[in-house]
Image (cartoon, rainbow, N blue to C red; front, side, top):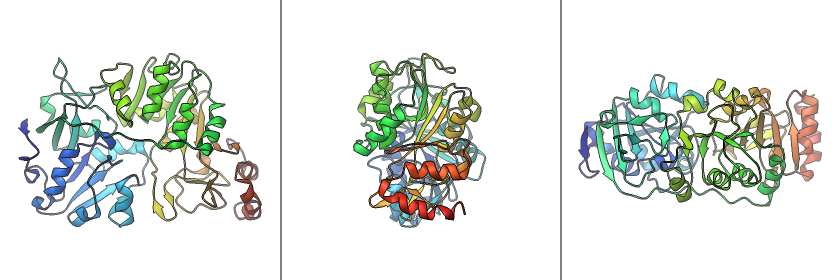
Length: 420
């Protein structure tokens, strides 16, 4: 293991033309390493590829960096959206559960991995800090692992700890972490949350997607008892539920007493809460999104959102007004897990409108991210449409009933397009 500063780290010694480079996403992004790589990109001597997840706040990626970098990413968040709009981001429309294989031995196998880790504990174990997820298997498969050891990164418990032998290069830093701000819910989001929260019983185990609606739902659950959490990501709302005693994981049928997650997305309150907290365990995507693991959790409730849903239950979670804004992500993994769980609830919640336009539609304007065969409960501010086991005619009736009232006549007229 070699120790460097960002000033003397020469990426040309570690990255080769044609390589694939990957780093942790969101606040787990090793920002000083990424900035140095972008600055030195021309030294590599040829084009190379970078796989992108959720970008960190304050990240430096821009279309100009595509002069010698080919960007591939699974989502349209943050700066990724600008890259996609400029035609500089190739979208990977895959389920999250597929990432570990794709990024280790598959078509996107990574050669160079950039990590942000927490300093070692008394036993010499470095922690992956804010993210395990698809990083864990790449540690063993990548040719080169370069780590930023950030003194301010939280030391967290998880399935994988690291030692000096796991790194080829180490750079020491002492910088604050970017804080992930979740949008504050408005009246529509709160109305949706009121409908969804009424479905969630004491002792249920939750998965929550990203955005204002899942956050609003979690905010309403402070009066529940012994909730559990098994999710791809957790943030400030989860920490508040744990702090107030509503989320104890005491009744989980798997990982009892422990909140399980792959990634932390939140602010300082989250970073401080997860530091050395054994009640939170980070796991790899192969565990958090595994179909059999999810099915084994009783009363598993999947809470996700969407761009639009058609009258038969097809879901578009990726594209809006011609722009790539979302992702396939892990929604289908969790929805199918909830459908198989004893007492589980596969829920997709969304506002009924976007501006003047209905988000309950006769035909999707973007791709089918989740098929109608996987549709469960669709929720808007106007109510709940339970599509499980329903034929198309009944699905249409139930979906129109939760659409914005001023759009219902139009949806009635166009329904024959999907059910002639």
